[in-house]
Amino acid sequence: MRYVLPLTVVKLLINLRELDISHCEMLEEIIEPEQDRAEIKEVEEIVTKKGGEEMAMEKIEFPQLSDLALRSLTNFTGFCSSKFELEFPSLIRLWIQSCRKMKTFCSRPVCALKIPNLGRIDCSDDIVIGWSPIKP
Image 1 (cartoon, rainbow, N blue to C red):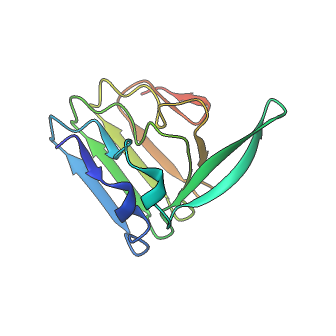
Image 2 (image 1 turned 120 degrees about the vertical axis):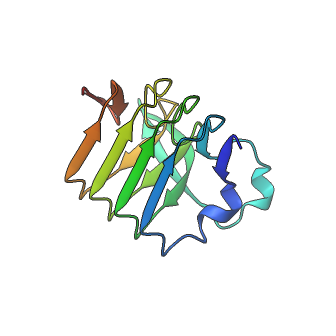
């Protein structure tokens, strides 16, 4: 399994409180990147400005997710590689351990990340969360 969630399923997970993924050698990303955008009606499109230039981004929110653990994922590169604004309004704890190929939480620089209540990060690898490097 290279991906956990097809994009069409993500909006249905409004009550997801904990996500713990570990020891999955083939996993590359949480959200599957390649899908026909025409069939994805439940993902809200937002317009952002980057360097004075407007660009459309899709918003993905995990409203109840409070704990996210990503552990021992050999080929894991990041949460998603597509252009999304990711929101985790309830995320309190982020645990990343032994995800050696993961360098950033969002693989593309245009990915926006909102984690207003994050209180604790446990990280065993050098990773960039948003724009700040996290060192073990």
